[in-house]
Image (cartoon, rainbow, N blue to C red; front, side):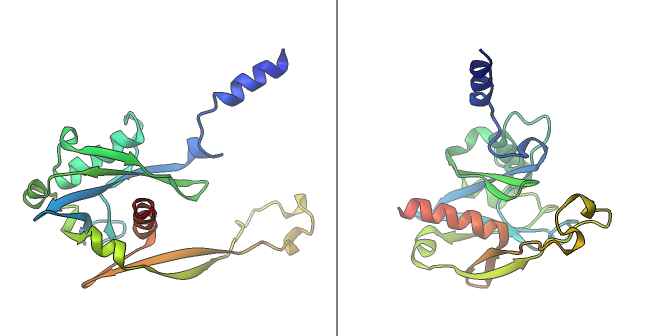
Length: 206
């Protein structure tokens, strides 16, 4: 009887990974637009007035609020706030795999089609410096390049070394993080946006 209860509770667990419920959760939309018969991916350049990551290239999106019904709801809400796109007008194609940078930070990406003509007139200039597009065919034909970043763990000053074998001499394992870069004209797309973009391009290339 106990085993059946455990099985039922384990099978109804909705967490994608350990720590998801307490992680910083955000959602983004990869906006596809059609211009002159050609499919393109739209990007934002964050306003220089923004407190965090001013001038960075990104997709529309942001933190998932407690009042958001789902990650998709959050992605569409943020897209509306940043680009002025009515959520009902977005043709959502599919979700991508979540991007888990660490157990404390996760991004849920979605792919959707939006109207470019509405964006160029109504995007929020307080948050968005500019918008630009990259032809999808260009992204399919031009491979990004990668550089590795070494991440070293640094325990806090009050870490309980007395509880672990080897104490302060414990050998923390370093890890490498792949940083991908896409180049297009005078734009360099990198970081989280590039990782999500690469997953999208790899998925449709298959």
